[in-house]
Length: 121
Image (cartoon, one colour):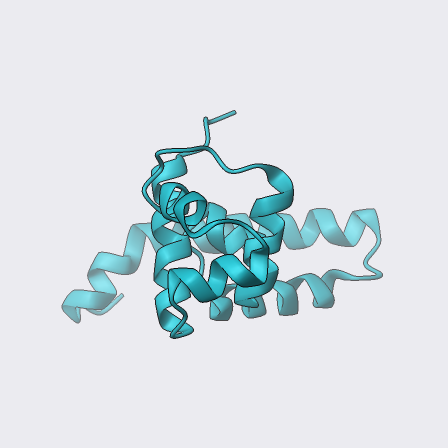
């Protein structure tokens, strides 16, 4: 498993805090930590605990995954929609769908350059 990149997590916290127009003081108050501690989290001068991590995500109104990886809410929505479509599928159906998705993704990867340059198939 990859090690957590606390600097990137801190930078994402800062990005979302600023998008929500919150000062460090305001976010720190919501999370019930000191402003100094929040500043150190954002600059990766300290590693944040799991409870503080969850409280920060909650205070910012975002998913914890968004702080761990650079994934947009639109991406989450689409992934959840796909997951919803798969609910109730049998193992056999899931295997077929997996094969279709794997083949489609592979073909898209091979042809994406051609589609961008306007070439015909």
